[in-house]
Image (cartoon, rainbow, N blue to C red; front, side):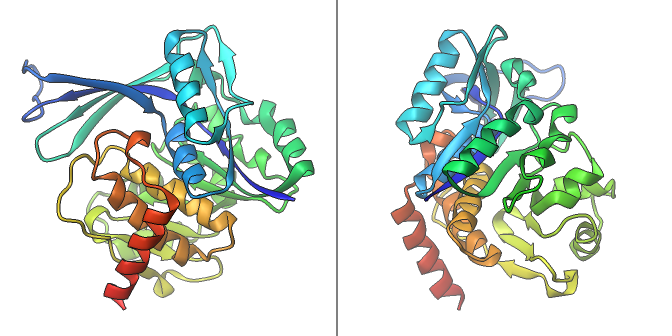
Length: 315
């Protein structure tokens, strides 16, 4: 029996522009156009997951256009099963990514075909995959329409699959969706957004409230690492996992998705949530060493080696 991770999410084609500094409102600046490459949180996280080893199936949609053909071909090349990616008359989703000289980014997304990605219609596909083997993890993000995001729990209903939910961006606060998440993965800003709290609310208070909403919680903190509250634990028992520090940062664009996809893969292969997040930190760090999102991801051997080194340093 094979082990499969099902990813329900978006596919985009990313267009990169490099600038010395970000423009302010009303300002025109000169930038340098970079390459186009595979993007979208669903696609990125599916690639990160597949690189770690599990059979990874992506449920998504693209347009009947050259961007869609390019995205699907690249996903296949990176080991993702694209058999269930729908082809539609809407254009393939796009993201326009502006990077500054410090490696930070601003991203504008046009959803296109991603608007038709509907978990209710995909439930029979997931049920068929369960008949073929184990589906311990269904992974999803917040880039679907709010109405479709609220339907994600149907993909794990009446099954032993866990829903790993990266609610980025926070497009819905649907209570059933949050209750089903195991874990809910958000960054510090998104965590406060989910709870509709002020930006300066202490992380301890944020964790306490999040653990009342979801079965388990991971809050990523950028250069400070991540905080994990596992299932059945209280916020007072949160585990802080230090970030993996490397000498330089080239581009942070895909680091968050590398983290999430790696966490999903590790959980599917039997790791604890803390162990999975240690590997996720390593994958995220390695992703900052190259430009792009999915194109910057390291393989399983590199991620595991860096994760082991970091754990020895932190011990």
